[in-house]
Length: 123
Image: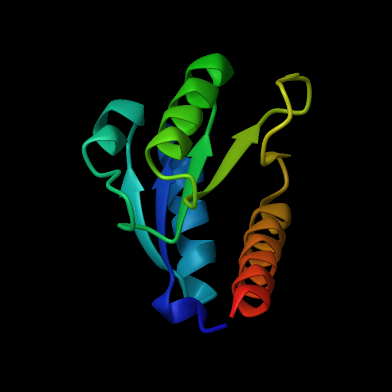
């Protein structure tokens, strides 16, 4: 799969982490569209606009989870990755511990590989 064709909306309030994550994703060929917070992202989240929406839950994991659920209710095929801290416990969803930068890229690649397998099986 060609990462250069894949569009990622990255929602992250932390300027340093956002910059680091944008750089990491761009270096690996993804087209990254940053959003500063959930409110800014809401206006951009239209079905089919992005291949993946990555949400850093930050200090408000419950609000981030609600946002992700609303995205999925509008577009059940939308890939969403919710990043949370190690001590946060949320209901089962696609989420990861956000304290290791290499896990972000690994998790994204795994999600896209799984998605490609599902599409291939359906064809």
